[in-house]
Length: 249
Image (cartoon, rainbow, N blue to C red; front, side, top):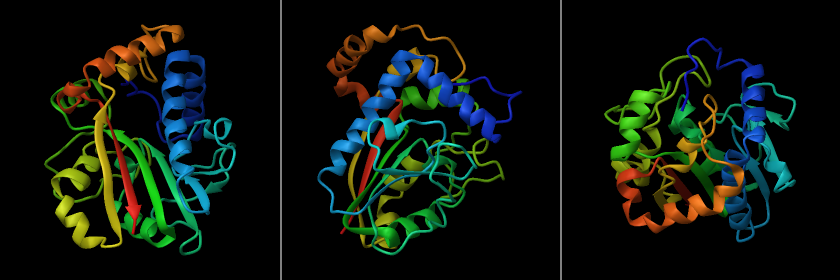
């Protein structure tokens, strides 16, 4: 959630400022820790190989798992490799896990990324993504209160524009892994969608995201999480995010 029309979202300084905001908001930081820990738990089940975070930005995954190689398209002080997700500078079959938070819907050409992911992943390796969901609530929110584009009718798996962060289509993950799932399966026979689950209808919104004050204190994280999960049967209608796990056969 954001009101950032006067901010250069593609400037490295903006990304670092966003990282500082996450760290200063205890509730929001705990949400990121939850996602980092989910990837770390998944990593324990993967074959031996490199663990890669794409679009690390101002994140802090190394505090949870120091073995993860951090990457970003921008030159940032906290990343190990500056690279595009469409051209991963690693050897074939060398990566056991790829982790991404809100990254896929910014990638200009998702086809190019998926080809690279299929190439560098080892057999049994997985991609773990947290991306915007496409539900009744999320469509309303993203279209009316968020600066990024959200167009589920887009025919191509591409994002127009040159801005690595300012240009996006939040519906791309849903387009690929729900609407066009059959197309994905045909194009990438070595990749299989293992999981796609909508979740987190309110927690991120209550933090104010990266632009507005939080309305929830850090100590309430477990309580709010419990209350959300009580209504998990409604996530398909109100989830703001989705977790996507893709496995290489």
